[in-house]
Image: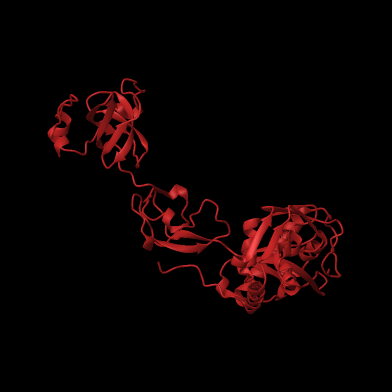
Length: 387
């Protein structure tokens, strides 16, 4: 495949932190990060010191580790969960050698915001006509600022591609943002690395009285997930190959494929348009038996194996159970697909199922006409069996 994930460059600050930890752990025991089960914070951002107790290293290295940012704090009155895997990922992104770190304690930290949480710098202008508890205003303001930050990062970090921006904004600042003239925002500030870390940015805008306003915001920027999409149009029934796929960034990876091994070699269950993000509904395992195929069905009873040919009523992949009907009759049995053109009965043949709705429809056999006249008494093999 020619398309892949963009390379991630390690910032100088991360290299410096890594060097400090390596030097410290070469001369002392590995750092011990004991994760808490609950944490209460008062700032706009969550640090490792809020989530865990660090020990086993010198004081300087301990301070550096404790100051690593984990993510934005939840809004007032809400809580957030920081799982062990997220903490590991944040440390690794900061350049920490995880081989020299021992984790202990809880697997999840429940983080809540203290009542006396300080607010960030506010603009002087406050428009009237908005209720302080209007959550829709806050969500709209956060969306407006997130879009402005994305546009800003397109110029500052084009290699990051599509990014997800989470902004922590209180109600008072939200009202000021909504009151901006023409909803135009000038974003400034921030530093490298631009993604997978928190950023402190300044947002300038004009209010409705044409006065310049400025607020400081704290946001967390992460790279949008990569999923698999169709590079070309894929017809229904075609086996998907690696060259048919490409990586694409999306806002949400729900139900989308993120591993090529989950898609390559499967069959398109429906026509897939170009650039379409692949989901489970788009692919299926390659059927070994198709509708109206004449299949050799085995039935094992008391050490005796009886083979006869029946027509498939549904498609089936390996190990799938499919209904099969008699060629000259109306009996239907359930059999598990065991190979190309082969199946084995999984219920007693004497138990008859209801005839399918299309049993009376003409059947188009895919084998030679001789198949329809073959007799199977369970004792002798037909010429078709010996083939």
